[in-house]
Length: 143
Image (cartoon, rainbow, N blue to C red; front, side, top):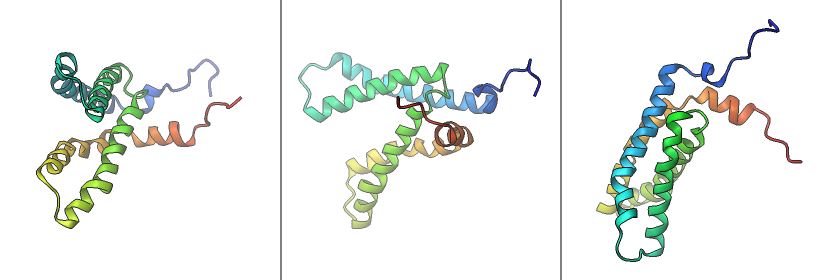
């Protein structure tokens, strides 16, 4: 290796197309939640029930963090992986058992159908990058 050459940066490990697709996902998540969630957060008039308030502000924070993904699509990959993981877990633990039992109601179908966008995630997430930077790479020191 030439001593004057620079090591490949993270951005060079992932194609520009993939970076734009990631940015598109972050933008879609931000806009979707901004339209639905932020008006509810800003203009709610009565106190929320415990879980209703938790979910509302958690989704608001998620949408705000999605903005960072526009600038740093690779550094914000854990946000996409968290989104994909909790939705997949909900489908496996909640939706599939209800569907098998034949007790899936309209509310659960509505939540399930809102997860359909998640189908794109595995095709857009750069899995080689994830493996290299989150599995193979040495972790930060403990002391």
